[in-house]
Length: 434
Ligand code: AMP
Ligand code: MG
Image 1: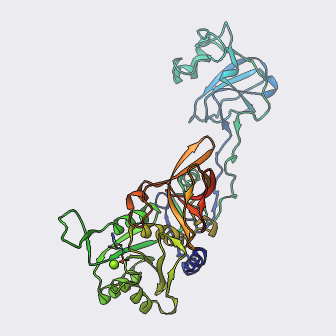
Image 2 (image 1 turned 30 degrees about the vertical axis):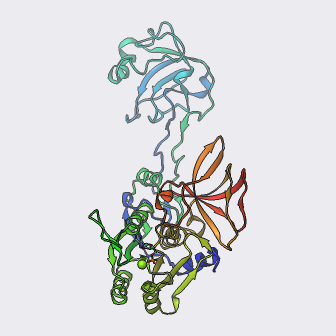
Image 3 (image 1 turned 120 degrees about the vertical axis):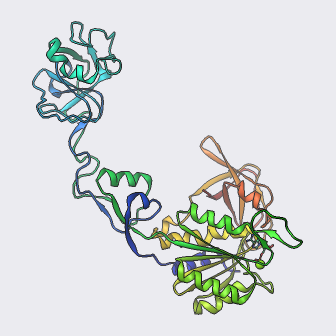
């Protein structure tokens, strides 16, 4: 048997990154940036207030100030300025007016008793009218109509306080996102904030999925004796999509050497990775490993991996395309996808070596995870519960390699090393499944 890490290393070495393409930012989620992102403009573009309140000269605070204007977000501040002893009412996101260098938040203001429009009704600190007060148009002209309002800044503020400086999020010319970073929803937001509609990413991998087996039946019709319903290909297609790859359904192929050869040849030519299921054990009709050996030249390897489940695994490249010969047992098939195919295809999509894997977390097994020594690492399907700041794991149902329902309710794969297992209350490392 070959240790898991040795097989993974060999697989990853054959999974070379795909080429870079420019795509719309919204279509890039789940890809990695092939080129760093440099800010072509400042974000924010001009200094603005982080709080609702009044824009002031910090040196005038605390103290009584005359309100000489109103700046909601989206309004051009040209012509609005703050002189000594003055304040401009300002709403979050509005540009700072000339002369002001700080903001006193609305919570730290007291309306002045004999004030102008809106202020006289307020009944204490924090009640400077925002909602339910005069509308924008009225406020903007309130000073002129009712004479200047007065307001009391209850606290002193420092220059720059509650002000977001221009370029504070992204200064012009700086690298805001490094090459290799994953495009997440937040990255899409950053690109939009910079006015960049596209980005250059490593191409999203097209992953072909085919299953093999004369016993397999698709859909919900009646089963004849000897037939079973095909579950691996739907589960793998879903796994491929969930991983952020593009799934290509290549159907069921009969257990015939010629049919399997032409299917794998065609798939390798059309896709960036191919997943097959079934036909890699030691049975008479296990043609996938025979055909893969023929097609992949010297790169073909057939492993008995020292893990349970998912021991048999065939791998090779056909015309440079990695072909993953996953086992037919449904749990083994999905666990092999997790151990070999998902990290390998992520590598093709440009993820850094340390970003290929599912999150690995430490957990406690209150009931233990017993096992017998057999020379293999056991990947135990467990449920995960949070207990305060600790994670507790418990075995989920049958651990047989065909018990798909136990896999379906598992949150993680617990890594139980060879030996007698994890004693009750012992610690165990787990790969969290998504
Ligand atoms: P094999 O590796 O082809 O010998 O298959 C091992 C076991 O997995 C057998 O019991 C198969 O019937 C079952 N199996 C193989 N392929 C599938 C599939 N696509 N869906 C569900 N079960 C499968
Ligand atoms: Mg088979």
